[in-house]
Image (cartoon, rainbow, N blue to C red; front, side):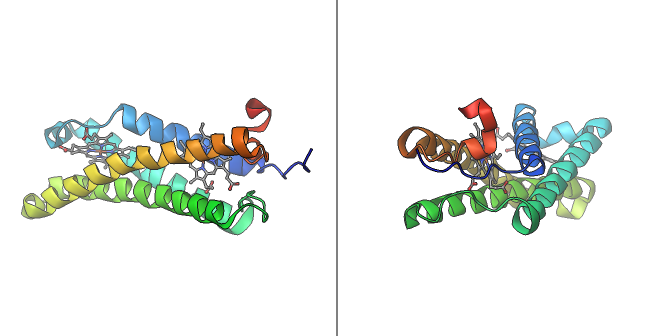
Length: 166
Ligand code: HEM
Ligand code: HEM
């Protein structure tokens, strides 16, 4: 039996699961078309939600990087696991920030007639790209967690899931 890894703290876990739920919620209500923004209540709801999601990911990033949450992947884990997990974590942050920034840019462009042409098209294209890439990264991330649980059996997954993953 290997030594148990130090679990992530409550704040790191709260950030992790809260932001995961927000992303799932964001996907469940994804827009079909820009014309839906004509409803001003809906427009502002989207803007507030995207801003909240962006700020939550920013706060979480600062917290995990500078305070509570550095990786629990053991130093003895192979180098490729360190590289892969870091790449996927960074990828998730980048793709979420891209969804938020392009979403806000779409909203802004909607209100400024001059930006309603090429700029709007490019932002929608980038929004769609980020919306497509994020689930791929999240699936890779969950596969990585399961890899640690069932193949490595090193307790890395349980540092975030607690007794739920045991
Ligand atoms: C069943 C679902 C999930 C499991 C079991 C899981 C598990 C984990 C574990 C064990 C860590 C810590 C890794 C380490 O210490 O190096 C972690 C970190 C992380 N997870 Fe998840 N996760 C899940 C879902 C998600 C989802 C849906 C997202 C994003 C939408 C996400 C984003 C992240 C990010 C960005 C990190 C890096 C550390 C941080 O900044 O908090 N995870 N996850
Ligand atoms: C100000 C905020 C936002 C605005 C104005 C906005 C706008 C849009 C628009 C206009 C589309 C349709 C794109 C098209 O016609 O191809 C779209 C699609 C989508 N958005 Fe957003 N968005 C915002 C934020 C978000 C956020 C925060 C999420 C998720 C976390 C999200 C998830 C999605 C999804 C899942 C789709 C569907 C993509 C597809 O079916 O291809 N959006 N968004």
